[in-house]
Image 1 (cartoon, one colour):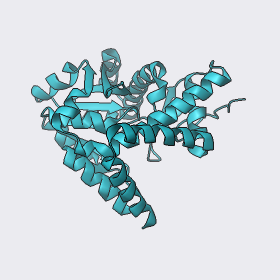
Image 2: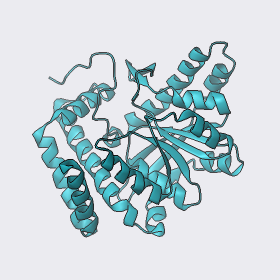
Image 3: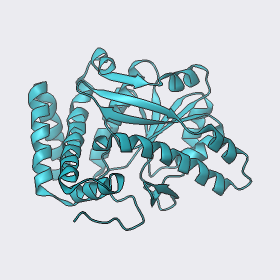
Length: 296
């Protein structure tokens, strides 16, 4: 209960502050959390070391510090986003290859977007809801449940349909895609014990099988996205998944092998964009199965 009311107070407090004060406080909080060097910061540093193995110790520390600050910018955005106007949301977003998503939805083909934990994916979702393309997604069920329900209400007010990851989501997501809708899934960390092994920055990681399974079941448009921060908001980069790999998976006799091919192709798209902007990749958990060398 204390945790719930703490969330509610922080949410109210940050949303009530003037913009410049709120983001200055978020940056200061990020600096403080970095200096405390807790388990999340240590994990982030180790993950960055896999992404950028040749960084000097000083550059690795700078990246880690900036990454923690970026992560707290995400929380500041989250606590303030539901008070933004439609024009604020739309004008603070730039998009590359937006047609990959918009055309498939307009043509009622359905569009599945997989993305890593980067930038502010809620901000990106709010943008598409505001331009008339509502989406369905899956969220990790937080404890206590009152916190999860608060985040559920927040995202529903933005215009998203939210499913809990503890529910049987595949039938609902399949239905939405077959109806030509947009489904967006954060897919760089497996929350189940049945994820697919992929090579990710040269090491073995597990990612969820759901996106690959949905594409095989629906034949919708399947693309990836990467969200990064800009000075005034976010940039969303959409990328096609290698067509030859999707074609190979579609004709494969073994469904399990087809899922592996698709998930690996998805991981390669994630890898390329994370390598370009690692500072906005907010992965404070372990995702690699292989041992990760700690910085010296």
